[in-house]
Length: 143
Image (cartoon, rainbow, N blue to C red; front, top):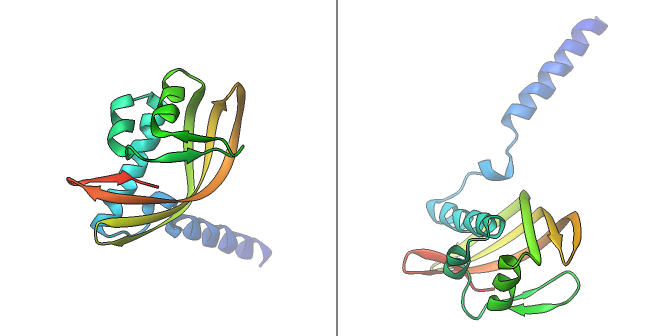
């Protein structure tokens, strides 16, 4: 009896693990998928130090506020990525939600960044809310 109960519990956990949604497997509309793709493209561009992609996906008036409270313009942020002051190695998305209203989208996200930032290496789990605007078919981060 105990053995069959243990087998039953193992099977139940296996089934639950198979049907549980990971952040990238959520059911999304086509617009939400486009926003998520832009988010992933930004993350990849930060890791790969792809200036052209960062300039494409970041609005020219976008500002950044770091955990320390330091504020930067788009150009300052991209410059520090390019010179290695900010080196991103991995972005592990834990959870997110996307709300699209016309050509504007709000994305709430929790992710763990693995990086070397101002000489300090580590992994930090951060949450935030970003705003995207659709321009010429591309979702651009504006906030």
